[in-house]
Amino acid sequence: MLYEGMGLVLLALWIFCIFDVLTTPEEICRNAPKVLWLILVLLLPLIGSVLWLVAGRPERRPQTAPGRFPEYDRPGRFVATNPDDDEEFLRKCRERAEEQRRNAPKRPEDD
Image (cartoon, rainbow, N blue to C red; front, top):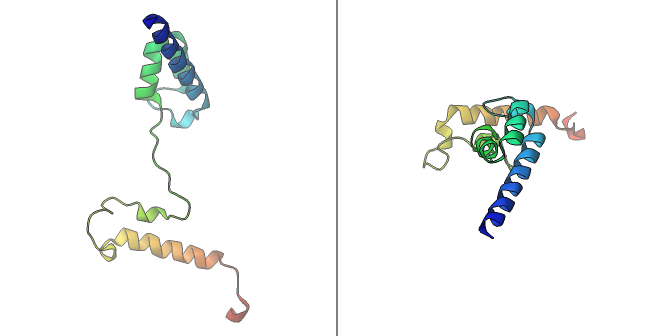
């Protein structure tokens, strides 16, 4: 019974990794080309799957939430520092404000 359960877990892991390799874009695979990862996972189910998860799968970074601006995701943002002291932060804020001004529709009172 234990071996059957372990076999099912291995099968599920293997299928997950095959699907994951197939759906991962080539340019974000780590340490080897996508085709090599697929061959490795197919031929060596346990070792290939574990290697894919540890060394090949792209790192998932949290994406910026809608309505948030990437300049707020700067290192040290949880440290009690004044944002006015961060020149890069201020530059990005100015650039974003300029871009918003350029892309804003013209208002009749502006003429």
